[in-house]
Length: 64
Image (cartoon, rainbow, N blue to C red; front, side, top):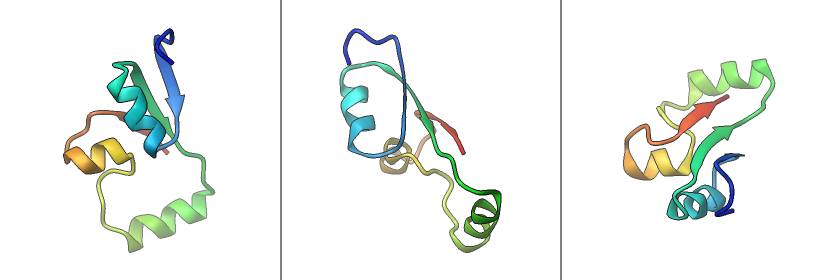
Protein backbone atom coordinates (compact mmCIF):
# COMPACT_ATOMS: atom_id res chain seq x y z
CA UNK A 1 0.00 0.00 0.00
CA UNK A 2 2.70 2.52 0.92
CA UNK A 3 4.84 1.58 -2.11
CA UNK A 4 2.02 2.42 -4.56
CA UNK A 5 2.00 5.75 -6.38
CA UNK A 6 -1.69 5.63 -7.32
CA UNK A 7 -4.48 3.31 -6.19
CA UNK A 8 -7.72 2.37 -7.97
CA UNK A 9 -10.35 1.17 -5.48
CA UNK A 10 -14.00 1.29 -4.52
CA UNK A 11 -15.39 3.37 -1.69
CA UNK A 12 -15.25 2.16 1.86
CA UNK A 13 -12.80 1.67 4.69
CA UNK A 14 -9.99 0.87 2.23
CA UNK A 15 -10.17 4.41 0.84
CA UNK A 16 -9.72 5.78 4.37
CA UNK A 17 -6.66 3.58 4.87
CA UNK A 18 -5.07 4.72 1.63
CA UNK A 19 -5.78 8.35 2.47
CA UNK A 20 -3.98 7.93 5.80
CA UNK A 21 -1.03 6.40 3.91
CA UNK A 22 -1.03 9.55 1.70
CA UNK A 23 -1.45 7.59 -1.51
CA UNK A 24 -3.26 9.06 -4.53
CA UNK A 25 -6.71 7.50 -4.84
CA UNK A 26 -9.17 7.04 -7.69
CA UNK A 27 -12.57 5.63 -6.73
CA UNK A 28 -14.35 3.64 -9.42
CA UNK A 29 -17.73 1.92 -9.70
CA UNK A 30 -19.24 -0.19 -12.44
CA UNK A 31 -23.01 -0.33 -12.58
CA UNK A 32 -25.55 -0.86 -15.33
CA UNK A 33 -26.73 2.30 -17.14
CA UNK A 34 -30.36 1.75 -16.11
CA UNK A 35 -29.32 1.44 -12.45
CA UNK A 36 -27.32 4.66 -12.67
CA UNK A 37 -30.27 6.43 -14.29
CA UNK A 38 -32.62 5.26 -11.52
CA UNK A 39 -30.21 6.14 -8.72
CA UNK A 40 -29.74 9.66 -10.09
CA UNK A 41 -33.47 10.25 -9.87
CA UNK A 42 -34.07 8.64 -6.47
CA UNK A 43 -31.02 9.58 -4.39
CA UNK A 44 -29.93 13.21 -4.14
CA UNK A 45 -26.28 13.03 -3.08
CA UNK A 46 -23.33 14.65 -4.80
CA UNK A 47 -20.67 12.10 -3.82
CA UNK A 48 -20.40 8.32 -3.55
CA UNK A 49 -16.92 7.94 -2.08
CA UNK A 50 -16.79 7.64 1.70
CA UNK A 51 -13.98 10.21 1.87
CA UNK A 52 -15.97 12.76 -0.11
CA UNK A 53 -19.15 12.09 1.88
CA UNK A 54 -17.39 12.55 5.22
CA UNK A 55 -15.55 15.71 4.18
CA UNK A 56 -18.32 17.29 2.11
CA UNK A 57 -15.68 18.15 -0.52
CA UNK A 58 -14.38 16.51 -3.68
CA UNK A 59 -11.15 15.09 -2.23
CA UNK A 60 -11.07 11.98 -4.40
CA UNK A 61 -11.86 11.58 -8.10
CA UNK A 62 -14.95 9.43 -8.61
CA UNK A 63 -15.72 7.50 -11.81
CA UNK A 64 -19.11 5.82 -12.14
